[in-house]
Image (tube, rainbow, N blue to C red; front, side, top):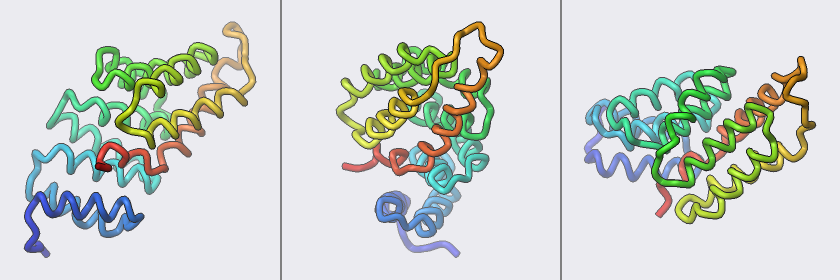
Length: 194
């Protein structure tokens, strides 16, 4: 059933619902918004983000890809797509998306992407350095900074494995687990808090 709300009202109601952990309401508003306005890339992003916060990563991946079809330069959507891919064990696809952020704006996403890529390569020190650099210049999305600090903590507690080791995939698997935890937090909505 279609409501009497405008698309702008639906979008803002969805943000409010998501910020108040009312994912059921947020999903309802966002599904109606995207149905009515299929080119509303922010609505698509928030819908995919809500799926990710619920641990519904396959739905999130579909949503982030749809958002990027509408708005290919939406770097935060690409970053969230990469995290969702990593959360589902699709490491190669996630790495491809992270590499696409090499010239992204905002600049902090470049450093966050590099940091996660370094961690997938078991380059713990380089990963931490890039993540800290991203945090230092990110003044617009503090909740994302908090989650990147969580990734740094996870990296700091991970044992280092020599690059020529036969167990070279262990850090990537551990990071995917940490990304899975990370992807379920509210940082996905941080860009919309004003």
